[in-house]
Image 1: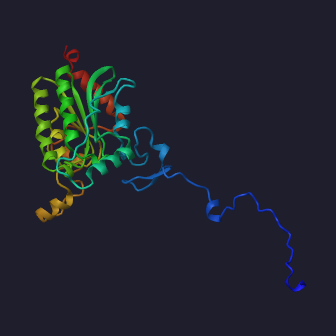
Image 2 (image 1 turned 135 degrees about the horizontal axis):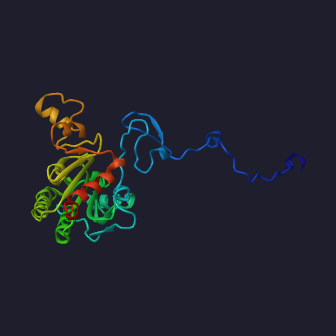
Image 3 (image 1 turned 180 degrees about the vertical axis):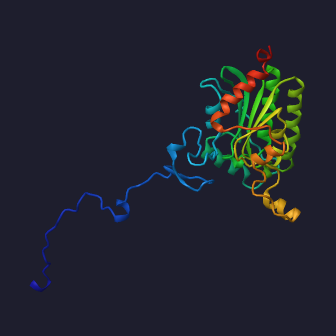
Length: 289
């Protein structure tokens, strides 16, 4: 019957073109194209920071990873990493600790919070250790303690100077007393290296705090710091609550420590390799001759 006859429609093939919303039509900007300087608060085009990752407006030193640090410090093609087979354990069965370590390893591509090895600076052979705050805030656990201790022992065996770049929030709480034990363990290795008449240089970078500051970070024959690096033991808030006083703004900054004799020299990052090369030459047997 005509009453129930279907109406005929002209079919139009749907467009194969993707429908773009006004929001999608906006130009996209990569997440890492711009960065905000924590010091001057200005937006900075990431590429303008250069390899040294220094703010062009106020010279603030952005935090960099251990691989970047080694690339800036060691002669190209001369670095050999040591002790990559030392693995993290869970000595006190801390909940989800090993899962967190695995997650951070996958995210950062790092084995642990420190990288140690041997390389050359301007042709001068040196043992080097570099901490990385991207790995659980550069905290010192049993693996960090073992790798740093072995680095000093190998430096003593090879009769080489050692340079340590520190960047750490302190002892790793997930490993309990075992992490605190690393302070004495490393300091003993530092002492043996020193008794061998060998040079130890520490470079304190932002941040160097807690048990690392209280042990090998301040044990160097020469203690260098990067500009405005935070260096201390307990945090500002903890100290203020304990002594019931307001601390000065510059407290625990590299410049404050230099003024009070805890640091020998502050060296800008772009000058670091040249200055380290000079120090190695001055303290080498050839330099003394």
